[in-house]
Length: 332
Image (tube, rainbow, N blue to C red):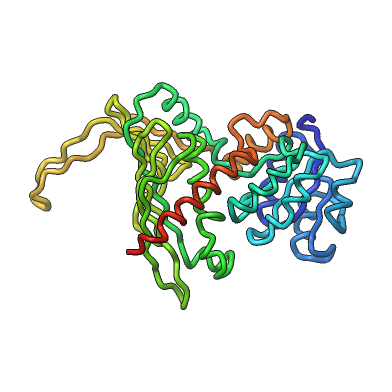
C-alpha cells in the first residue's frame, strides 16, 4: 500500500478530521465513512471537507468495499473496544484510535485467539512519532540514564465535559495512557515497585490519584505521579550521568538543562536562587495535529517504525492494571 491509498473511516467525529487531513496531505484519498446516520452533523461536516466521501451504512460493508485500501477507526472511548474483534478480523490494514481496549484482560483474550491479521493493525498513540520523542529516544540509546520522573495531571472538569462522568474510572486507560505509552516506548517494560492512591471527591464521584515508584528493566527508578488538577509540569523528565536533564514537559517540547544560573540577591528577594540552565530546546511542529502525519505515513507504508502495535498497547494496559492492583491496599 502507498500514500495513494483510498481510506475509509469508522466514525466521523473530530479526531477523524485530524486523521483525514493528514492522509490527504500525503496524497491519500478519503472515500467513505460510517456514521450514526447519513444526516448526522458529524457525517455532514466530514463530507463537506472531503467531497469524495460516501456514506456507508455499516462496518461490514466498509471492510468488504473493493475501493477501500485501509480503514481508520475513530469511535467514542467507551465503545471502541466493542469493535476490536471486527478490526482484528478485518482483511484490511486498520489504524485504531486509542483506547483500543479498557482493560488488559479484554485485549489479552482477543490476542490469545491468534488473529493472523493483527500485525496489520496500528494503535493511534501519535506521541511516539513526535520529533521531540525521537530526539530523547536517541539520547537514551547512548546510555547513562540514572532516574526518571513521570508526571500526569488530569483536568477533571475537562474530562467530564468531553467524555462524561464514567470516564473518571478509566482516566488512566483513555487519557493518561498517552504519556504512559510514550514512557513504555522510551524505556521498555516498566514494573511497579510501590504504588499508593488517594481519592479526590468530584461532583458526587471519586477520582483515584496514583503516586509511587516504577523501575525500568535496567532497574532505573521511575517516579510516577498521576493526580488531578495538579499545578505541576506534566510530562517525562530524565536525569543522565553526564549531568544533563532532558524534559518532555509537555511532550511537544523537549528542553535540555545542564548546570545552573545563579540569581543573586536583590532588594525584592534576599535569597540567592539557582535556576536550571537551558542548553537546548526543541518544539514539535504543530501545523497539523502533532505526530498524526508521520503516524499516517507509517501506517499507509506498512512500516510502522516506532508506532504502537497491539502487543505494545497490551504492555500499556498491563502496566495500568498493575498500578491499580498494587495500589488497592495502599489507600492514603
